[in-house]
Every structure is written in structure tokens, then in C-alpha cells.
Length: 335
Image 1: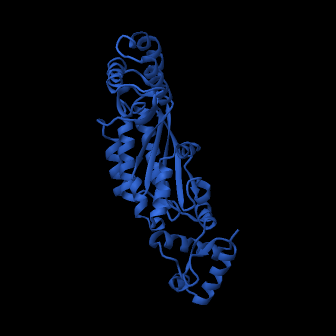
Image 2: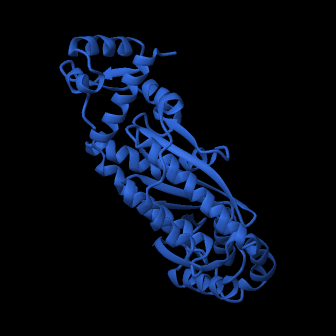
Image 3: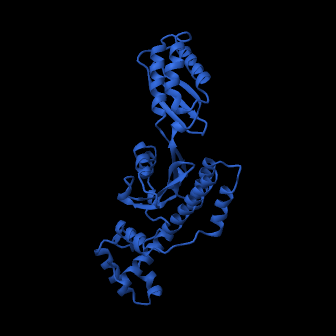
């Protein structure tokens, strides 16, 4: 455990670095602590030796380490009330009766990403709780297709379909037309059964090589029903953070946003708002993920905010807590 002075010093360094993104030198802290630069420099060296601070360059000041941020979040952060302007923006959304719960969640995350410059994501229920809106098919080759599956809730999933043998484009189009005609409005959870018992017996009347096409579409649509409904806001915000200044950094983090394993890891969380820093995130050593679960309309979802380790923790924690409470309030009122 840190001494009172060490804790205050670490808190000030974390707070200033979060605001400025510039390493903190001892001279910048003399007014705050009313002691000499040499004394502060010695205290900072002790914190560095304990693993709470680190240096990016030999001549620069210090920045918080992952251990330093963790101590700051667990012991030093002070509760910060959500600002009036932030609250008003969010209240306007959740009090709008014309918006259903999904739309309100999406718009609230859009606002969060806009006002924080971080990335936000909501993981909803599995797609099987949606209805099928349409299936679009784009042939790539004679035996390879892209199927674009769209639900009534706006969930879109692209599926690569590899056919066992070559099929003419017109036969693919006939299959697509039949699927859309018979499956539009069908709950995703019922699609597999409808394919097997209603479409399979008649597809041969319309399409040559129907077994090849039927088997391919059956597999694609059956897998789709287990996909999570994922909505991102502000993916490009990561580009605005100085921590991700190189092309390789950006490519690395953006590619991870597309990784389904990341979605699974984000989903693994408790109902409380939890903070995962650096290596704790399983995403990237330079990011923080703050996430929580919500319950509304009998369903469970996950909210997460992703930003640099130099995140405004106090603000984001309070925003996420507030959104969670508003979602559950709106969801509860609609039950």
C-alpha cells in the first residue's frame, strides 16, 4: 500500500496525464505539492521502482504504468457526477417514446462515442431473436458466393458460401428469390425448420442442382441464428488517440475489432461495471475496456467502452452506469 503522499502524487500524475497525454515532470507538480522539484523527483523515482510509473524516454517525465492505472482506479478515483449537458443529451433519447429500446441504446452509444472520442459497442441477444428481413446473394465464382443476411432489427451478417460444385448464376438467383419469398418475416430461430420442412420439398421444382444450393444455404442460415447482435459506434475514434499513431498500430487494433473472439471476451462480464486495463483486456496492451451487463425486456446485453489506457475513467464509469440504469428503466417500463 502506498503512503498518503505517494498516493496523492500518483493520483495527480494519472489525472494530468489523462488530460494532456504528455509525460509529467517534477517541475510541473511543485506548486501542487509545495515542495522542491528534487523532492518530487525522488518520490517519482520511488513510484517508478515500485512499478506504478514508467518512462517512455530517458529525458522525459513519467507516465502511469498499467499497475499505476489499476491502483488509481481501485483506490484513488473520486466519484464524478455526470455533467448536466451529458445527462440532458442522454435523457432526451431515453424519454423519447417514439424510439424503441434498441434504437435508444444505439443512439446513446453514438452520443457516448461522440463526446468521449472512444469506441463503444453493445452486444444484444442472439440473432435468433430477430426476424429474417432478406437474403442478398452475390456470386464471386461459379462455386463461391457471398450471402448477406439482414434481420428486421438491422443486424447484417456476411457469409461466404462455398458450393460443392459449380452452379449457374441464374440458379443461384432463383434460390435467392425463393428464400426471400418464403422466409421473409420468419423468426431466425424458425428458419432451419422452415428450410427443412417447407422449402426443401419444393426447391427441386424451381432450381437445378438444388441439393448443392440447399445444403449450402441451410448451413449458412443455421449458423446465423447463433450469431450475437453486435453494434459498434466510433470505431475510427481510436485513430484520434496519440497512443495509436502508427499505421501498424491502427491496423492491429481495427482488425481486432472485427475478431469474433473479441466479441466473446467482451461479453464475458459481471452485471457490475468493470474496468479491464492493458493486458487484462485480451485485446491490446495499450487499451482499456470498461463494460457491464444490462437486463431489459427479459433479455441480457453487454455495453462496453474501449479507449486508451489514458482513459477518463471517472467520466466513462459514470456515463456507463447512467446508460445502464436508463436502459433498465426504459426496458422495465415496456414489459
